[in-house]
Amino acid sequence: MARNRKSQSAAIRFGPALKAIVLCLVLGGFGIGYVWQKNQIWELGQQIKQRELKLEKIRHENASLVKNLNTMRSPPQLERKIKELNLGLVPPHPSQVWRLPEPLPEEPNLELESRDLVLENRAPRPGPVP
Image 1 (tube, rainbow, N blue to C red):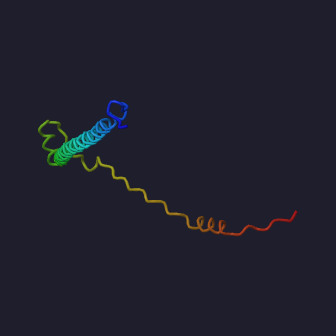
Image 2 (cartoon, rainbow, N blue to C red):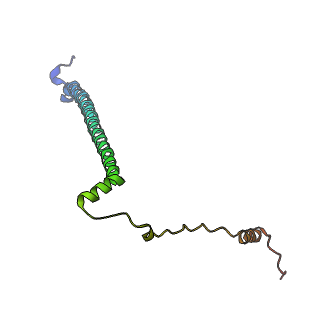
């Protein structure tokens, strides 16, 4: 006797539909994950670009500030600023300047070093046998 659809169990009737739904969910999940990942990569690229531009701007400002500092430290600029502020500073008289000789580096004592090397390289003496 032939079986009809009414006598089949519910699991057999909904099995293919359930497989199709699971397959659609898996493929949809992969698609959403792929799009999310591409979006994250694009956003990180934009952040990197912004930070590189900011770094270049900061480097340019730093170079400008170094140039400005070097200009401000130059002797003609310092003299002009002293006159402008009316500080009354003048170069010291040569008799007011003390010149100190730079100390010479100590020369190593070769006799002590050679004696230490001889003592290190010497073989130990045999002691009394107990």
